[in-house]
Figure 1 (tube, helix red, strand yellow):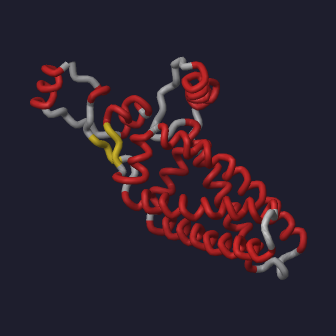
Figure 2 (spheres, one colour):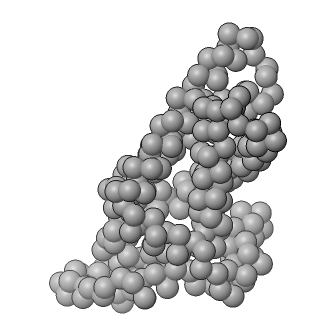
Length: 232
């Protein structure tokens, strides 16, 4: 019989403006993270350290302009995203109790019950909140350290440096986990990086509340359903 598991209808999850923003964010934060670690540990020659600093500044400006442009041009999407990631329920507590079932699946080869999720699961919501808060702190502290380090009060400069360091290390630590799980959820990875769409069956499996509450039902093609039933 026809079921959600075989429903290949596509649902748009990430529109073009979100994908462009994500591309620029990714390809500006990666060099920021690498050069930030270099500037922290100082393993290179003075000339190489200066180059790392210059790259850090340039990519920091790119990331800042990207964030400002997206906020101004897609303010409604920013508001929706903030509302999603800061909405917490008992489902999120239950999700974190089993960590989305990922450790059991990867380490023990077991499948455990995971509470139904909306458009973003609890881990993605936590990462999104960290990106929003940490990214804002990185931008503001980075601008102060770059533009007015000698004009600002000494205590403010020191505090900005500490905030910049902690926020940068936190987001850098999150990055490999985010990238690994993004590739693991390959349909969602393709949606964010390529065409913006996820198959209905994938959305229904991983984000059933989003499908039930926000996706307009579409009647399946009867002929396609009959063909699927015949081949089942």
